[in-house]
Image 1 (cartoon, rainbow over the protein chains, first blue to last red):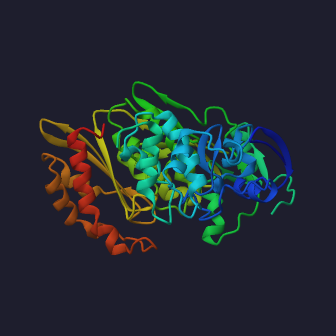
Image 2 (cartoon, chains in turn yellow, green; image 1 turned 90 degrees about the vertical axis):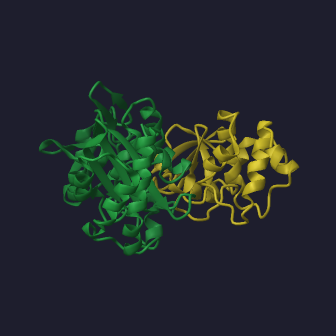
Image 3 (spheres, rainbow over the protein chains, first blue to last red; image 1 turned 60 degrees about the horizontal axis):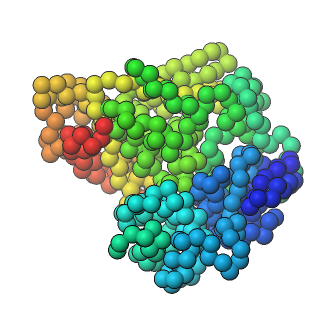
Length: 154
Length: 284
């Protein structure tokens, strides 16, 4: 079956199984490896991408259900090497990244959240992160960086 | 992976088309969050599927004076948003807002949640049971409407010949609350879930409905506790004591998150929490 998707602004067609996880198509066919394949059951958040701006675990999305929604991966947020938004800038400035496995997902989940909740508290940020696991357990620094991105007092 | 597969995913534009696809062997596909985890459960994601998102009204929530009609394709996130401001539905709002994690809540639908026969830990199921909701199905023989607890108990036999079209939740004088116990906050399946709805008049419980999920393989009412709560003031500690005296009402399931004995052992605490939340009025 031919599946046509708009990925990071480009319209592309694929001859593939419509029940294939979007995650696998992104990584294997598009070589967009920022989304990580970890738990593959929607618990860890490492594969988070945006569908029309909404963060979702791409391991649970069959490519045949994407439809005309815009797919944005971490690679689509900005040019390589550039921290394109306050959240990424805060992550770099505060040296938050540890092993890096969870970070594309963290950015993809937290970015829209803090944009939509400019007055978010630390607790609200933690709640927004319940679907993103950090095996290095660096959560507090991530929360602090998110608060920095919001310009919130610590 | 990657082989072209014509006919593997059918997009139904009508109930009739969906039922026809089902009759020819296709499985209904809603948000995909249960089916896509088939490989993790050691199952193959084989066969054909029919997606229901193209059917008119599947993703709509309509609030009338007496009932709220929830299309089966409404996601948890959309449901939580749609229920804000409606009094009495605190249990359902809390269930929709607290299940799984934010990303899964954006995908997983109420219909998929109720139709995943092997999924015991649905948050929506006990909330809908406590609220007296009904499942509205379409079948080849016509519409079929039945209480959610009956739908859940019969769904293995009803599906796939029946398409869950919507869920209808009555609005009334009852207040409701939802309590769940995941072992970790981050997205775990709760080991036990309890929803409580109660009509309180003159300081006493006039009527109560209790839904219990994740304890047995299928969510159900707790009639013994409902009877015990009726006629007396709602007191969290007394309600927990009444629950403890009736733990033998359950035949709990063992699972990787918890053994059966633990699932019932925590029920009194969940009853206490639900009663306290209901009385505090933060449950809607």
